[in-house]
Image 1: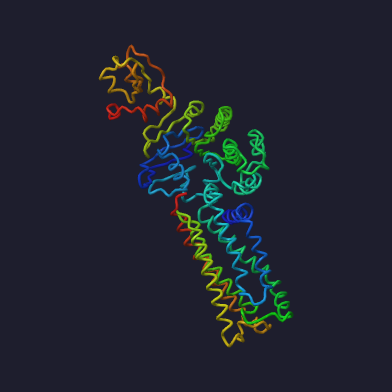
Image 2 (image 1 turned 90 degrees about the vertical axis):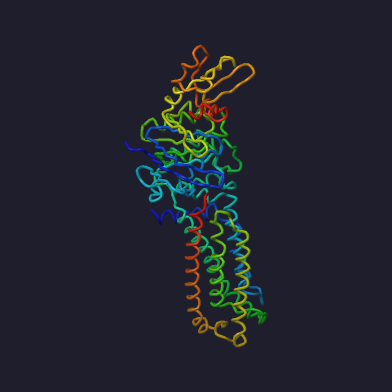
Length: 289
Length: 224
């Protein structure tokens, strides 16, 4: 089956920030985690994909159709969530849903009811009366109720408590389990991706610096730990990021170079440690390799 | 599908985007026709505050962002909004027609009618249509610019509406000392005024088409 989303050469220049040649695909049945620091370009990428921001160049294809030429058809098949629902603060949930559902030919009233009950949303409440978490849940209820094939979620779990986040990651897994739905999921909460993502796209300063199968990425790195006197020049050069303390060091190393840390403690890396060591404790000697 | 999208966007405007003041001003315009010796277009002027409020609410409600998430193109959102504004403007004019008849009779019967303003007739509606068309052209594109420019444009638009419509009203009143057929109220005079109403309607439509084109151009450029 062809990709649900295909992004090629997406570029956008702002004063002080540039999105450079962003390209990736989202395959059916996949949950794709889109990670990066604040300001790395995640939201700009998503907005450029959706046409909210006009990219300087690049092609976005959804379901095999050019997004710019078939915007309505494409948007019918996608569910979009930009964090918490921040629109029409004075209006009641019931009124907004009445408006929203008219735009979707596959609006599923039963499914919407299920999510409203599951998320314990009171339809008579005004948006401004909802907590941040409830606003996110309402956004999700809308996005999940029109049988979208592709969900594009920008920080969907921010503001949610751990139980709701866990509930949500279960829902995400359930959605993609039929192999016909996909989710592009941008987040800072990388632990959510450890639970549910199949594929990771890592953006840094406007460029995709890493993308691939989550397991392969995680298995491709190790965290090594030792005393400072055990940090040999060769090892230091191989480390992609080092965190030094008066008692020792911890560093991120590529799994195939782990032999350089023989005798030292090493552990499997996770998405968060890969991101933190790449961003915060970047070893400039090592990073040029 | 496109027609449905426009219809749904108009429904959105009337269900959740409309400022409550629009309803107040909808009633105010016909009511003000009963005030003797009052500049006639002013009653219709107040609706512009309601229309401007609708756009300022967009900023507060993040209407542009909400619309951009829906299966609708930016140009559809602009078209629907211009149609919504036109519906409101035409609605206030239509609602005022029966009141205009009653007001004309009531003011004439009371003997309070002087020469401060024009008579309540078809020309008044032609003048208001011209004013509304120009106001829309000034205000609406500001709501779709990258940097929202509704407040300044709204006030400029209202000032232009006021100057233009009162200027035209004065012109109508001054020709032949107010006896010119455009200021008349007899059936024959009103029939003669109808082509001017038709011309003003064409002008209004052309202004709205221009408003649409400029607004779409602005909205396509804007990053939401």
